[in-house]
Image (cartoon, rainbow, N blue to C red):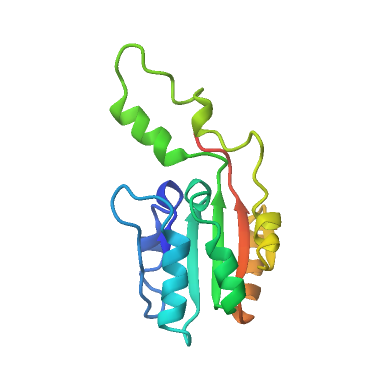
Length: 164
């Protein structure tokens, strides 16, 4: 499930040589359906692991899907791509709102997800999903490998540089 929005633009290229797989994506303009779609994929194909790449802003719309993953012990690994921002909204604002009097998207607090900071590890654990935080590519690789080999749900908060 790809709901990485601004953080996952290279996903198709990066997985082109991967073993056969399916990719589900959010529909144009929608935000927040990634984790529920991952639940649906896991229910529909319980014998297949589900990897959900979710932007941090999108994760804020439907975090209760984590509770369903835990309750049903679904084989979903959710990676939150945490750049501390509603980056796609900032990009769209840049595109659509270049008119006199429009606020600067780089200083608009509505695009900032750092005040207060969101601890996706604690959030996932409160729903019953084991979770870790990765701050380097090496940590992400190790944590993702571990999560994909263990049954049941997992969440990895992949900390990225703040969105530019």
